[in-house]
Every structure is written in structure tokens, then in C-alpha cells.
Length: 468
Image (cartoon, rainbow, N blue to C red; front, side):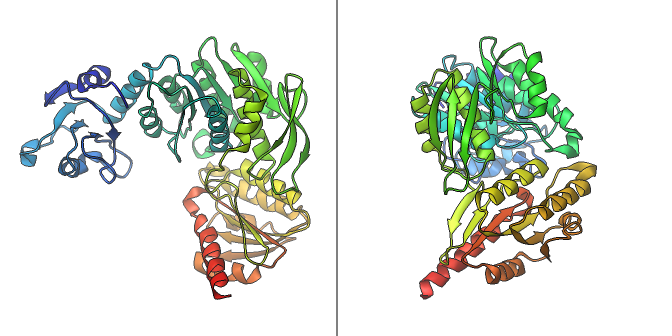
């Protein structure tokens, strides 16, 4: 953060100055007293389970320079003698968003892209930011900082030498995409796809589309939106879009498309076509669905004037996000893939299908957990996944953990399945079943924490190596 002072904050958030130095320079903003640094400004955010106001004393003890709060009955007299500068606002979460918007507006030369969609947001963001880095300093969200807290905190890292930004924006309720778009102020964007995600709130994919479409309205008038031409919801949307559209997909009806796809190699290989030109692309991350992500990232880079060489080099240098098709080779030759960051019906079907195509000669052991936030149709979606797995020839055994996966298990009439209430026991049985020709694939919603299975198997394999 640069060139920002407490009085700038007060004006931006319409806050009330209580005490301190209005000319205090603000160098860093934090909402977490566990990681707050001396001299930072602390926002006391009230969350679903924790209230930052309860940790103000901790913030003061760590010598923060200022505090933004909203609670009426705060007694700062009990915290003397080291009271920092204080600013009172009506709502600290809203104030954080207003401050981020004001700070973002200072960087009017920034090339900023916003990324949203039902699946592939994070990987597309990482691919796009890797391409951006071929030309200049780039800002992007870390981890799951894609909400109304994470996005503002990300934007506070903008500096005058930042040339590009690839910002992922997510949603779990109506209006969130619009709110985040208003903060990010993107020149361009990507909607990766529309599928069955967050249905606990949105109910139908059509309503998911309605929410995601608000990104388009927030794109600059002279900007553009990249849309997945192979997704029926987005393909039907294209004629209604008044902004410039760049399409991407697996067929040559799109502006950016792929042909000659080879999935059975260690790294997916395909020919990418842009504006009549072709380059052979090798991705550092497995899965046919990641080719879509690469095409989406390339579409935005192309729209911003990047050369095909820069796009190819950026994709090749991309580092796959953790828990997204994260691969490890075991000492006996087996392969284990961790895709346990999140899951919904669309991503489950696509990833399992892609693996079956990519490894036709291997016996696949699936480790699956519940798909969460799917609403009242959740049992049906789990059952449909079980029916789909029945149709794949090289799935040997399905290991299940959770409650909702029982609906999946009931449909596995043609496959061996094992149900567990303990991850420890699951790991023990799985390790005994792994052979040199095995591919283990782990996927479930983040709340199931199936990455623990991945880590346990690798730890056991390393111990085994040490014993040899």
C-alpha cells in the first residue's frame, strides 16, 4: 500500500475521527490479530463466527497504529496508555469495501481482469497472471481471497508499478458479483462456465448465470468479456451482450480454440488457435477441463494485446494451485492426484471423465467426499454421479467419506465401493490396495478436508522410502 493517510481513509469510508493523528500514513491493513504487524491499521470485522471487536485489545498490544471499529459500547479507556488512532464507522465490512474502491481508483492505468464462473476460476486466474507476468508486475488473489473481504485485502497490495491484475471473484449470494465488480473496476473479464454450484442458495444454474452476468455490466465500456463458447448457458448469452465478446472453446467456432488434444501424456498437449495462428501448448497441469481454463486465460491476454509467444510462455510457466490436480508419484510407480479443494457435480463429472481418458491403462481408485452447498437436490446429484461412475471401465474401487456420498454408494451397482467414517481407516485400507498400476484420485468439497488423505499417503510413502 502506498501514499495513503488516515484522513484519506476517513473521507473514503465516511468515518468519524475519534482520536489520534489524521495525517498518519497507512502502510498495511489487517483484519487478523494473529498476523497483524506493528504499525498496521486494524479493521475490526464482524464475521459469521468471530467478531474482530473482541480482539481489539490484542491489536493494541501488538502496537497497531490505528483501528477502525463500529461497536457502540467499546471502552478504550481500559486500554490506556497506548491507544492508537481511532476511526468509528457504521459497518466495518462496508467501510473495508469503500476503502478498497477508493484505493483502486488511484490506479487508472492498471490493466485489470476479473475472473468468475462455476468451475475453474482459480486455475484460470493463475494461468492468466502467469501470462501477465511475461510483460510486467502483476497482482492476483492468494488462496481463497475471492470474497468481499479477500478482494479488498488483495487490492491494498497495488502499487504504482503494478501493470496488471488478475482478480478472482466468487459468490454465495445474489449481489456479491456486482459488489466485487464495483470494487475491482475491471477493464475485462472471464466467465469460465455456468454449472451446478452454490445451488443451496441459487437453486438453479439459470440463477447462477443471472448472478455471474452482473460482471459484464461492470466491465468498462471500451473493455471486453471472454466467454466459454462450449457452455450452453454462455453460448446463448452471447447475442445479448453489448460489450465486446471474445469466445473460447474446443471447436473452431470460437475466437480462441483447441485441436489435436492429447491427454494421455504426463502433461496435456494441444494446438491452440488464435486469429488464424497456431501454437502447440503443453500445460503443467492435468485434465481436459484445464485446457478450457488455458483457452480462457489466452482469450483475455489476446484481447489485451499479448503476443502468442507471451501467452505460450506464460501458460508453460504457470504453477498449479495447491489441491487442484496436484500430482505425486509414489515409490512403487503409482500416481496420486489431489483435487480436493472443492467439488460440485460439473467439476466431479469433468475431472473423473478426464482422468479416465488420460490414464486408460491404469486402474483408478476414487476417493470421494460429499459435494456441499447443493440444496434440496443434493441427493439426486450424488446419485447421478454414482450412475456416471458405473459407466467408466477403468474405475476399480470407490472409497467414500461423508454423509451425502451414501446416495452415490447406493447407485454403484457395477463398481466395488467402500464407505468410511474415519479418514485414518480409509488411508490404511487405501495404502494396502495401491499397486504399481494404480492411479488414486481424491476429490470432495473443501469442508470434507480430503487433502488430509493425500498428505497421509505421501507421508507413509516417504517413511517407506526411508526404510529401504
